[in-house]
Image (cartoon, rainbow, N blue to C red):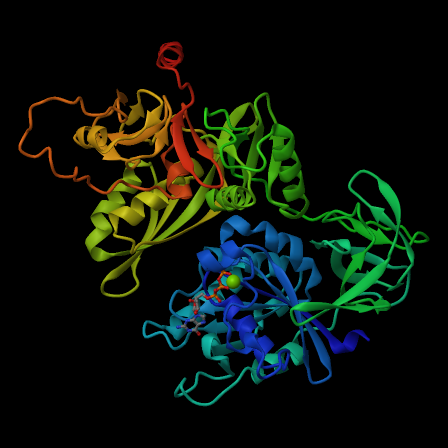
Length: 606
Ligand SMILES: Nc1nc2c(ncn2[C@@H]2O[C@H](COP(=O)(O)OP(=O)(O)OP(=O)(O)O)[C@@H](O)[C@H]2O)c(=O)[nH]1
Ligand SMILES: [Mg+2]
């Protein structure tokens, strides 16, 4: 019965509180026993290890709760623009969205993106102004901003009438009116009631042959692949024969098992009807976007619309002399299999083979670095090159992607930040005050100039800057290089670093390796004080002499070396450099390890 089902997606800009709100909905719908561990847990749905470490949602996830006699399927989505394809992939299971907006920040770039997607698809929005406990809240201003945004994005009049709720998601509280005191007793009943009353029942067809678009895939060791989607028409029973309608061909299959979502688990059932979100086992060839149909009524649903990638990176088998030291998987074949597996679910990603390895493209640096980090944790070893933008050709012209960039910065750093953006040819669109001390800047900037900007601004502002960007379109390529990076210190020979040699190297720049680590010829061991590169010896041992200098008895005192994160390494790379990624190490290196080959290459490219 569709009238007792509600399917909703929770959408918002990054960090506005989606996953925290889902915690509340789970806990207040008696999904867990009172003494169950989850009752005391937060961000329950952020179950991936990188999700909990980074504190962000990376993949969209499904859960279901019972409220009164209704079943509410909830899709928690990521708010980071790099993971936008997760929204494009899952929104077609929903009939409404909870649009969560931070009471201080208001509508942000990704708010606009997710709302435009939801309104385009005709989904009913409920607006939740969240975090009204923040001292910097400005609810009236946030409501104004939202009303402008709806005016801009609405595709018909009815979408301009949206209910607004006020919430402290973290405490599991929401109100219909702004409460006099947000510390008053409250729960999420008003949200549950609004989902039931105001989100339409699934807009599906009860009559006719089974039809479902695959929106998600899941896997486990016992049953293999689960094809997940909302049944769009008809019903399904265990053992039913179906046809998987793919992008290019059709395949026959049989439904072995059917599962419905319940809390954090799936429950097996023998049949399901239109409007339900189900996971089907037995369809091993099903891909995201495919339509599963009753063989007697083959009708394919429109394929998902996924925006093209903006950033690409070379990824290939490791060619360093240390290859194979601590990895389980390092051959081209193993890497290819892993990337192909990733493509099944990571629908915003593209992979093309090239002579040496692969070109992997995604929606941004984070999209790619999350994949790189996942692979190294699984025991893969490989090398990657400098991230590059994906250009397109139009009317004989090369175009590069541009983005809207939003920055919030303390007054003290305004000058330095503006200067850095100027160097990267960013155009300022708007500047406004958020508070006495915090300025909000809006720029238009090429995606190319965004590479490495986050690390640079974080350093410049002692970690205080807030930065967000959103793809805006394309413009003719400007042939300007933004890299004003220093040269590097390159290991002159293969061996183990010694404190003695490192101490001597310290005067030349900033070291990226510590003592007693193995390095190879051509590896980057530091950042030079100057623009060009320099080969240095970081392995030499002190010659033994009979002379004793005054200081030579004590241990060598080294300045702590700089350890780059994966993202910092990617930002740092120049065109003639690679990053070696292994489960244990990240090593920056020159593409050509041999100094003579390097010279020859550089001369050719002058
Ligand atoms: N002050 C305050 N903080 C909140 C509230 N709700 C959530 N937060 C905090 O906001 C941060 C982000 O919350 P999340 O629920 O992870 O946000 P999200 O929208 O799921 O983030 P992404 O999935 O990465 O886009 C966490 O530190 C929460 O504790 C609230 O009502 N008030
Ligand atoms: Mg989240």
